Image 1: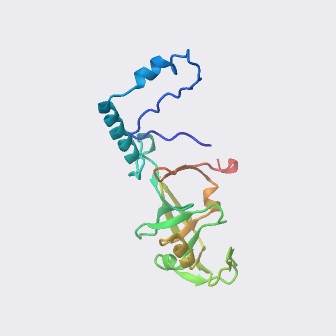
Image 2: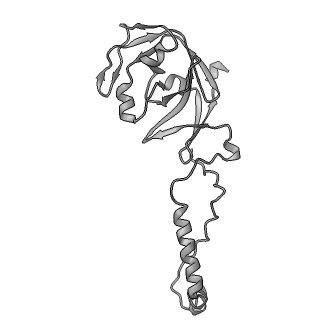
Image 3: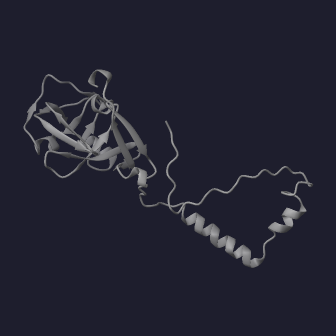
Length: 206
């Protein structure tokens, strides 16, 4: 569902849309209106300044957090990818990819080794667009914290995410997958880079 974003403090109300009927007897397009719209050089100068000012406001802007979005979490957008700061264990926040195309949560081997024991996992086979993933490992219990949620993960699958990090342009330390995301209603503000999650348990969990 799409909803209109809150207006920025510097945004102006859009001008009323008018229709040129081409009727010479219509005051909105007739001589009376044309005479009223003729501008003096001074007025034209002001119009040019206003136009330049309007053009300047169309450029990049800082993130704006509206009062009704103060509980939202800042995210980072790289193309179509959305990365959210995520804490694992007691480490500093790392960037995890929000990806409903991933079946489950995943973590880079390096990030997993920084918080728990990691062991080879020969029973699991991961396949991606580039083929079968090599050197798949399993991490012991890992606590993932993002936004205002915390989740314990047992035997979390980990592998080398370097190819994904290179393609993205920044280090990606993990992936939040469908097994977690399907329990959440997600609201995304692409303009300001904000996301909100609302827990929606399944009927048998209520």
